[in-house]
Length: 114
Length: 112
Image (tube, rainbow over all chains, first blue to last red; front, side, top):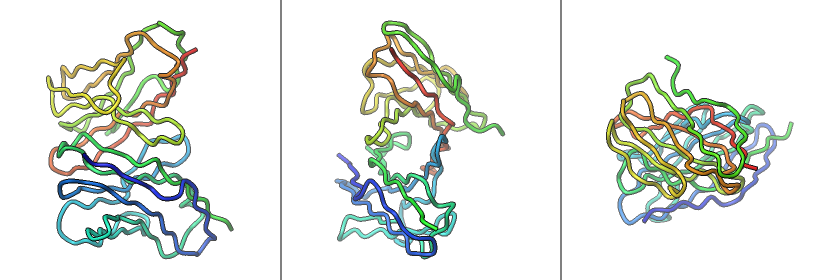
């Protein structure tokens, strides 16, 4: 069975600082991994995904994530935070090989201080 | 394209009432899913569908029914509402092979 753990329910950074949101996964098969972002009172939007191939994945809004099999991690980073990055971020893993079946982490709320 | 639409946006039910949350997509996506979001719990899968006529249970299916008679629509039925079903419900769809899901704006349901 697959599962996802996000370390830190709240992360606060200053504008211009590095953003690092941590995600560790558990999977008995090669994982398909995702990061989604949710702005207040909205649905989720895909930031990036890892399926196969290159382990460093670039997404929208300057975010990227690196799949590290040895560490079972898929941490999300952005070199310089912007006020508009304040949102909740969810890591997810595909479950059972079925495209419609995602297992989500509990989310990390990112605050950006001016 | 309107994308994924959900109705209603807000709903208040009394315990024991039934209702249907509507979800529609105009992108011809094969895959559709229903999730519920509760504070501190992330999103949990209720039911999903891999195509018209095919549905399967997710992590928290009890108290909910679904059917998929067309590619476009994937309604979620609450059979007898309970306060534990107070949540925000999200519908999502995705095209075969991309593994991406596109989410609707959500329905906020309160059961008193």
